Length: 301
Image (tube, rainbow, N blue to C red):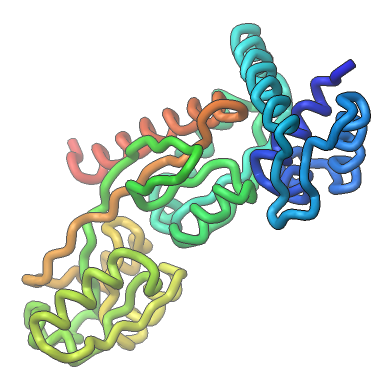
């Protein structure tokens, strides 16, 4: 007889192409995953997974069982939702978040999520978008609040909000001048890592306008960028609202500039199908929270 837990273990090992990632996803051990799949293979009478391939791959019989397992698990998820069991069963959500969101509306999102789903514990990882999306595909996190849009196989995305990008510098650094492509080379620009949109876009603009490589210091920590700008190391290029209020109001000033960059657009990425139901509800909370933040910041009463 097939057990629901064994089908769940098999499904996630197959989907993530890894026993260890399935174990992490299901909060169990890798030997436990292997034992359950071996028991399924004994029950079926044939191998379900080709363990010699890297990453692991399904056999023809394994593909048949995978399709049936997905149908069963979808039905179980639908039943749990209809009976509101997903609101009472304790679970952990591994959440990847961009630091701009951490500095702005993440706390409000977590507060609202905890009110609606008191059974959820969050494990939060703060990172830039490319490694976050890789972690999403590899099953290391369940949901990402990150820059987009992006095509991530097996995942859907919900638009959250946009953040304008601005240049900030310590008072008097430019002597009251506006920041231009011509004088931008006088100080390093302090901004997000090389594999992010602001760095690539800014570098392209300055190269085309000045015909020489710009000085850009990158860092994945907004707090570090802020500290370097406060120390007069250079000019910060970050999303509006991501600096501490006291630094922005008293020490760092937004610069006038003719260097215009498109805003940062953030999305919630979460899986389709099995395991994605409650994450879709969390994505909706994230969208509502982002809308409230944007309205309060950019349309104050």
